[in-house]
Length: 223
Image (cartoon, rainbow, N blue to C red; front, side):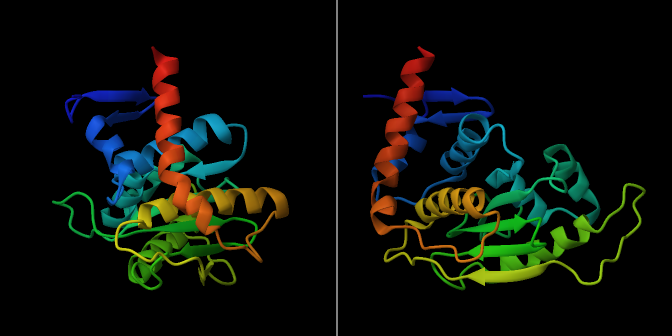
């Protein structure tokens, strides 16, 4: 039997242990290691040549909990301000001394629309966290390089998009991954997030097995 803490895959800055991969067998809540790996896979392998900012979940957590003045330390290296699209997996943990949380949702910033979009598979559960983070990011987007504030005619808009809803207590992370896929593909087709279709339930249902197959494939390639 493989020890739970044995390393399964080292992928760029992501390190997955057996205990992380076991979460894909369900019914389990996905942790930030699995979600962070998938974010990095999309960034490094699938959409590497595109002007999209992929914010890993632990960075999103730092953005939530850090003072406003520290946001440039996290976001400037990611080229957040110049990216056409930014995707941010968001959880509801607001205690800096604890890890994890109980719910995931997806916050997206679209530059050409100057708008934050929030997709939540349990509508309303992460609303306050998403709005608070969008407000902090709106302030960051108005910062000039000299630290002064550029005041546009109006701050970025915030829109809560309706989305397919989960019917259990543990698939929110799976919905985040599927919503991320859906948002990026729709944006690449249309240049906006208007008229975004729901993710398909069959894609959600097979996401865990698809992701586990991907991890095993990358593991084999690394050996």
